[in-house]
Amino acid sequence: MRILVIGSVNMDVVTRVDRVPAAGENVRGSDLRTIPGGKGANQAVAAARLGAETAFLGRVGDDEFGQRLRANLEHEGVGVRALETVPGCASGVAIILIDAAGENTIVVTPGANGRLTPDDVLRARDLVAEADAVVLQLEIPPETVARAVGLAREVGTPAVVDAGPPRRPVDEAAFGATILTPNEAEAASLLEVEPGSMGLEAMAVDLLARGPEAVVLKAGSRGAVVAHGTVCESVPAFAIDPVDTTAAGDAFTASLAVEVVKGTDLVSAARVANAAGALAALTLGAQPSMPTEAEIAEFLAGRD
Image 1 (cartoon, rainbow, N blue to C red):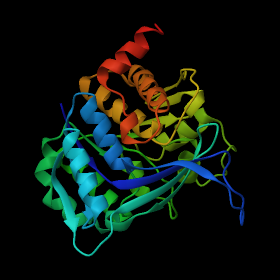
Image 2: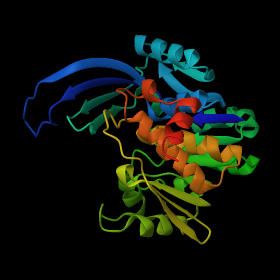
Image 3: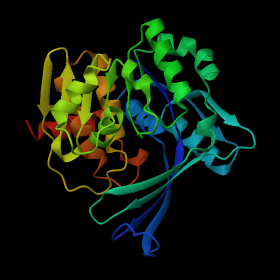
Image 4: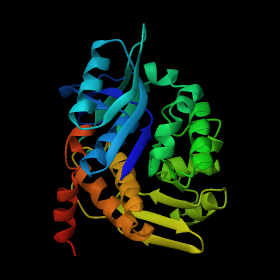
């Protein structure tokens, strides 16, 4: 079971606040930490912890953060031969505020992630062809995402595209995904509608009509919606008291990809992915919160 993740790797600078400050306001933070993150690297760590042979294609800077980010991926068992260091460039950084309810506000500075090019993807053709699935996000340049999706299609490798973070203009390459996994805000962005103006099922069906073979819409505490073919089905969430939701969506996407590669049907895969996301939200930090296969099995066993 081989997973190739093409995407971002950041150092997360995380602090807790009682509430996110308004414009011009100064609030006191606590528990400041630097924790390896980035949507791509989070998903790579999650896939590796779930038992997949995982490789990562991306870029870090030639700074201390870059060294730590590479070392952490290696420690987690992720293959990093396609993770290159960009001379004279800073690594990606995410500034994350976590409020009392466990919700987060994030500012991302791409750094070296912005240097991942379509040519880099082409040079990794063998990795794409050998993978059972390629997992992508939108924290790397849009032309690179487009080339990766196109190459995956050429060589017959399923492409799972996490549509975050949303950006303008709309990333049309996302619609070429085998499986598209946006959250509600990302789905609204892709459809160019106001958040909350459409129901979850309607958004999933509309996204499906744009080209992906399947859509699995992540809705946090409301679970997920699976749309493929003529099927549109809601998959309930698991009730938890979240500590930090920063990487819950990344755990969900990685788990979904692993389950699909195993041959699990999409609705059942989404239930397992809901469990992965719930477990991730119970721990502070992005990569430290990624659950293992055994932890997910134990979590689900208590809810069957």
